[in-house]
Image (cartoon, rainbow, N blue to C red; front, side, top):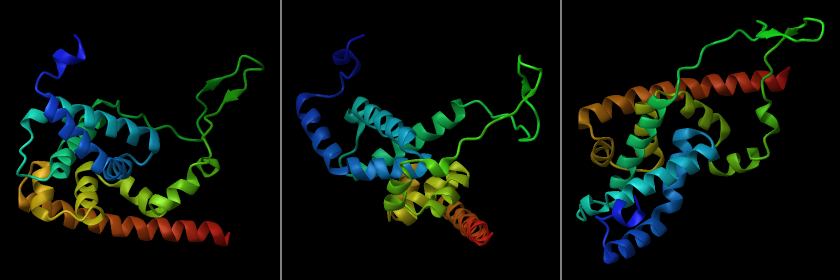
Length: 199
């Protein structure tokens, strides 16, 4: 199936309008995607998939509502869909061997990457404090999305409800619980990193 047939709902004038809207909010969309996913590769994928879906369904976009709200609703759905597709990770003890080597039948241990050696760490500090990002990443996805849209992007509760396709009461509940969890996790992260620097 060709692209022309796939995107039959987008007319030439719509294409021009869509391009202008994307140019206007691309950076903001990427920042929201980064805060949702916590890394650049997944943020790129989420942004690209969101714009692809937005383009595909652009004929359904209600021009009376802000484009960003409509886009963030799509992004939230894409993000949650992707999370549901990922297999559940099995937990392993770091001390437990995962097998044996063929040479001398020695235990094969799990090696964990050192993320402190990541060259993107300096970029991370420019866009969001690492402690806050780690705390955001640890929130359940519905709480994380609500906090990002309301507290970081500055959307009203009504706009968040529209973007997340839920009631105002649900938004208030998610924000209350999300902020409380975020606060406790930031405090916990900060005290842990402070203890590392002392020792």
